Amino acid sequence: MSEITLGRYLFERLSQVNVNTIFGLPGDFNLSLLDKIYETPGMRWAGNANELNAAYAADGYARIKGMSCIITTFGVGELSALNGIAGSYAEHVGVLHVVGVPSISSQAKQLLLHHTLGNGDFTVFHRMSANISETTAMVTDIATAPAEIDRCIRTTYVTQRPVYLGLPANLVDLKVPASLLETPIDLSLKPNDAEAEAEVLEEVLSLIKNAKNPVILADACCSRHDVKVETRKLIDITQFPSFVTPMGKGSIDEQNPRFGGVYVGTLSRPEVKEAVESADLILSVGALLSDFNTGSFSYSYKTKNIVEFHSDHIKIRNATFPGVQMKFVLQKLLKSVPAAVKGYKPVPVPAGIPANKKVADSTPLKQEWMWNQVGKFLQEGDIVITETGTSAFGINQTHFPNNTYGISQVLWGSIGFTTGATLGAAFAAEEIDPKRRVILFIGDGSLQLTVQEISTMVRWNLKPYLFILNNNGYTIEKLIHGPTAQYNEIQSWEHLKLLETFGAKDYENHRVATTGEWNKLCENKEFNVNSRIRVIEVMLPVMDAPQSLIKQGELTAQINARG
Image (cartoon, rainbow, N blue to C red):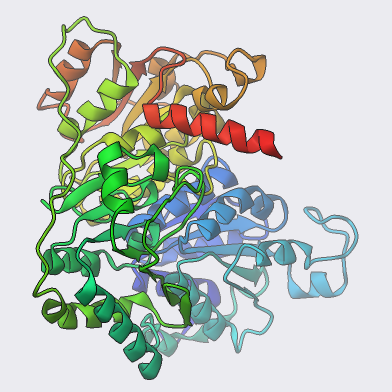
């Protein structure tokens, strides 16, 4: 095979970087491109229900596998995906957005084609995406097209940000040399500037050497930019008390005796708040300091000795070192830090949240009890996905087993994101280890935005656990404003009929309303094996919520009222 089509080249390259499922929808400007998926061994087309869900699914897949690809059609398709792409940009998730666009000649003639604005401007949608993409490319020359594809894949993977790639319909069938595939895409990071890196290491080691009460705080980009291993080793070597933010949940092992809990500013448990804020040195790994991630910006560190490790810069106290990447700094720090911590005497870490007290089996379920109990159901290796609202806040009090991956869109916070993300994560988990469980917790209100993607799960015989928290409406919004307002109400659904409606043949439905029903279900051995798709409807009081969400609702309402 001396030559292959450009479309086949794209999918072969994606396969080389371990992207095996492609998300999106067909449209007449991408149909020829989609044909090439079926020519590429090991590649599959998910076929989503709509482009927004496809973007959410691509996000969930990328969080597990390192990057993903979504394909949409020009105009109507690509714009429908942009909310999801914006979320991936905000939260550092590598999604390659491939758009099938009209032929080069059609664009040159400014034809009044469908899916355009009718003004002959074929660049307008590309320009829209440029603001939420790390880089973009509109392929116009077959000679340079393979190099552009390689550049876009590398940028997506290395920066963990979305990239836009426009492929004209008339180019995807043109041939390029197959030999180009023999040279792998370089996915390595460029080395840090040696002098700047040495200065960073010297400063950090000096702060560590002089610290008596240091802590490590892991945030979202610890996972996104692949420094979980380095961070865990740093905890083991230093024995510093270690904490996560809501977005960093799952980035360090919570069974480690040096794990102290989840830090969310004023929303933290008092003992966690005290332990973090009284530290004389904070090593912050991959921080994304959004309002819901910080308890409405209520971090109150008593020290100025703060080191922020980021993917593309390091900040030490008030000094910033642009271009110095944390991956290399942490790797070098691991070699030098043993000498710096020789005199350190480990301080106690806060005790974990106490186990639930035994109550009568007939006790109605409430959020505080449930989220404390979820940890008993979880297994090592689980992927736990929590929707914006009660779930995203409640999961902070759930103690994870080791190697549990948490997905919660705390910064972008697009309601309904998690249904699509669960689909993407389930595809990824199936490709890595079919026994790995994918567990969704979503409110009844959020589910109504993106429920169609359960159909795609059924289509591919994926086997996630879908816990639907039925508290009759948008509880998070009610806590912020309008507890009895009609706009926070929803139409009730028959959740236990969803799987049947979407054509499932091998499935389970469960409804739990008491502590006894919850325990009986979660202690069932067969239920603990992901042998089929399951819907579990959890009946909860309307205004019941985790205490941290109630406090966050009050803070958000105050901030909104200030103007």
